[in-house]
Image (tube, rainbow over the protein chains, first blue to last red):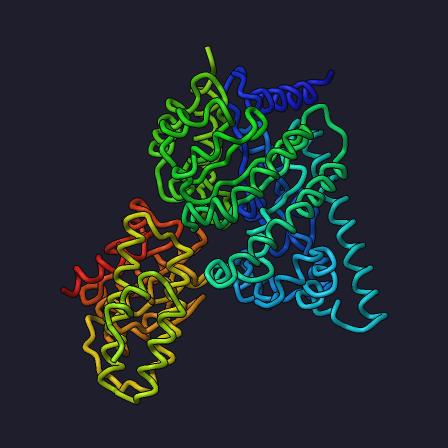
Length: 390
Length: 211
């Protein structure tokens, strides 16, 4: 085996051993660098969305310059798909800004349409949501069919380009973690169909209909996740899906129990049973839900956390899931090297003992100023040296 | 006359049905003084919403909904209220800073400071530095509130504070920053007077400044 392949395999083993809650040779470092990587490579977010080669080049540069064991995912979005379908939901506020999605753009399902949605979510998506979301799909045939074909073709190209990026990273010894992304049905409804504000109103005004819609949508979300798992090339390790969670920390526990938890648990159990690692990004402060999280399938998931007390987290979750995150991106932006290293040491002292901990930032780095590269490099280097298990 | 205690309780419970019925009753009588009392009762209810948030009973979803309910109450009552009738606790210029278009947190804060009797001039989302400085020049507020969700908002906040400095307003206005990425390190680096990720706490900070 070549030296590069050895490195690749070593890195993979280190990460997946830790994911199984075993102690590897040292704490692995996951590069949770999103569109920040575009700027690091000398491009803007927008440029990489239109030209995937630039995304690949930026990722290779990160893999060469920044000490780490794995990158989490290619960061570009399929600009060509949005354009072909006539999407108005994504906004660039300036040339150098990152793409953003507004809550107003999300309000595309009317409040009296829940029963129709719940009866057949897939049909509703195709017939109602897509034409409202994408202007080209609202046109008559054949314009609509052409737009659809063009969008599908662009999407296929996007998938192939992502695969090529993963391939060229592998050729340099750098693995990529995620094979796909899914959302919780309630987040999906909030983010894309009703708007977050809309859903908070629906919780009070039409609780039964919202609840039914979430249940009806869950099997479709699972199907979408499995579709991505099957599309990814075969691998000796389990496939991994990212699951960013948006609403939970904004909900009362009673609402969380009613609307969010049942589907979340069902999704997590389904994929665990199929040997797929679903890795939720636990946005916000989840400390009031740690008891819930203890019920998730053990050793089959990793929790990427934004906030929390590392000691409490380790104590409550160490038998259930591998932990990643908590390192404040703002410190990488505003702190000195010494301050960053002191924070990393504190996290390692609390979370590393016994394994089950991967080093990573509390959120994906997105804007050019989100982190000073020299801080990122210094911290990762420190973790690799200090995090060795003796 | 409607029972004001029931109104305050209904606002605190976020019970739209009770609120709407009571307000329709007040409106049917075309009584300006009664409308004033209703607004006051709803504001008190909103304060209770803030307390229930502080105690961990309510969460952000409830605050967003509370803001919407209060807004619709005010919209309904507006025709029955004579202009400029209630005393104001202070003046705040509020904005989601340049480069960011997230406004949910900003809107929660707005409804809560309005309920606490502040006059709020909300400049909206993606607001350029110069527009904030111009507005400060024009209305001479006590406080500037800067909001943002994305980490890139922090840079815009810093630029805004710097521009307020250069324009000579920094001694006359307090600056509070809010949103997911703010914390003590960020607040210091940006040069704001205070930060908060909790709207109810943010209101208390503002009250402390003008009280």
